[in-house]
Amino acid sequence: MISGNDDSILLLTRIFKNNMFKLLYFAIFCIVVFSGCENYSSNWDLDNQEKIGRNLAQQQLDAYNNRDIDAFMNCYSVKIYSFPNDLIMSGWIDMKNRYQQMFAETPDLHCLLLNRMVQGNTVIDQELVTRKKGEPASNAIAIYKVTEHCIEEVYFIRK
Image 1 (cartoon, rainbow, N blue to C red):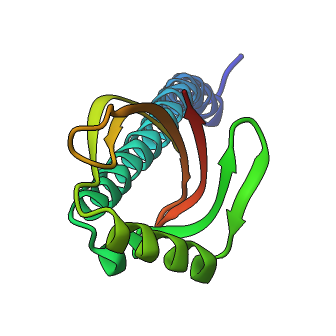
Image 2: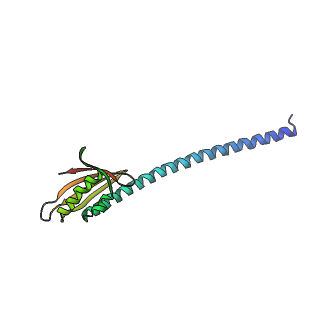
Image 3: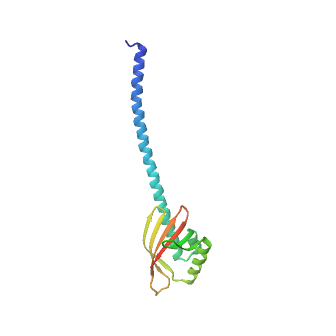
């Protein structure tokens, strides 16, 4: 036989069971939603990283074509390689000196961007480089490894 207190206990048990299912559904909902937010966040980071890489590659290309050594160097903290891993120069000062001399000696210097691919922190440019008007341009591929603030490494493939 169930007393009045027993009815209260049964009622509380039913409420608790119903709320447990609601809590369980709520927990599952939170896991799904927050897991989606985490994926969205990492996609945003990837998109943002690619945007930064694309912008840095374009800024240095514009500065290169304008022979603006300061704007050009503002894009770099660099090691430069001949692909796959032959170090050409390392260090900001060495790079600045070499490019400053090249900019001064080649007033016709111009790089035409033919194609750009970006994935993660890597930007790959296919370029046509003119050093002197009237002479054939050379084909080159530049592979930029970028961070949040600058181009860290560059790998060149030249024909």
